[in-house]
Image (cartoon, rainbow, N blue to C red; front, side, top):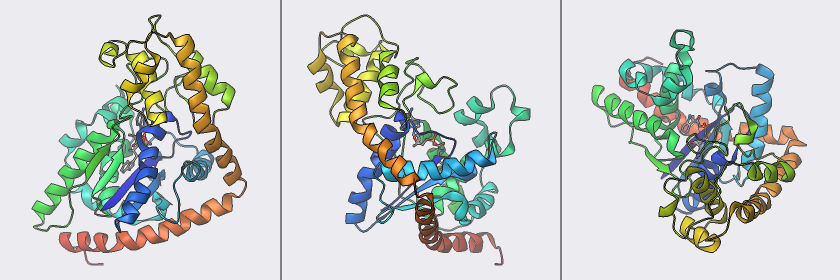
Length: 335
Ligand code: TYM
């Protein structure tokens, strides 16, 4: 079993990243190690270059986000933690796979359509080929499982298509097909201001998300101001079907508490958000405050964080090298 996943270094991590991805990563780290497998988690700094990028911010975000992952429970001794740019095999395999991926496949990617918007002519080429690099990220390790939020599922399906076509075109059985593991508890955490939009780093309003570095007061304020409706909570999740904002807050509570959403609505049935929101804020603070404090502690020695990333990159490079060589051989490159 080989588990691989990444996170783009475009700034603050939020509750959606934590519940949808990082919490799963931490849980898998022990299970996978016990079975003799590997977990590789990386900061996708090359992917961050596909949108407007300030070099100083990129460097700072890479360290801050590495510290955040460690603070949230990723153990650089058990998992392999690194930044993508340090393992050159990602970019090299990406180039090889650009010969396999089809324009039509990339044109159908919803993230491309959303991010490029109406201005496709002005979008970077990297934004278009972004999913090919993502495919290389997982295929270069022959990943078997990729824990992600629901929004990344389409990119993983594309990685499977690329792997299948490569294996077929070159008559090899080089790449196993990676399985996306979408968090059951929190596949898609929504914005605190709009139950129809996912919680996202790129939303211009900071009030739509809880960042892992927010102060206790800010967390409480964001939940207090979260959009809801005047109805009390019902006693079944089914009754929340057309109340997306309310459903989202219950989902967040359940995912934070490692409980089912159904048990949470049963506990709060008949109560309004005047009671539920402070309880949710207290729960979130009890989990996020220690993470925030550990981040601050780790960032006092950013060289130590860099050392973890360098060590992780060396271990990752050793795992990637044989696959890259096999891919080069398969296509006939003389290296
Ligand atoms: P990114 O950086 O947008 O998000 C990192 C992880 O967090 C999950 N996530 C969410 N989950 C639930 N609810 C949300 N609102 C939410 N927002 C984000 C994402 O699904 C993801 O798992 N392209 C990827 C990074 C990447 C990658 C990879 C992932 C690059 N190479 C290879 C897996 C394998 C991205 O931009 O994720």
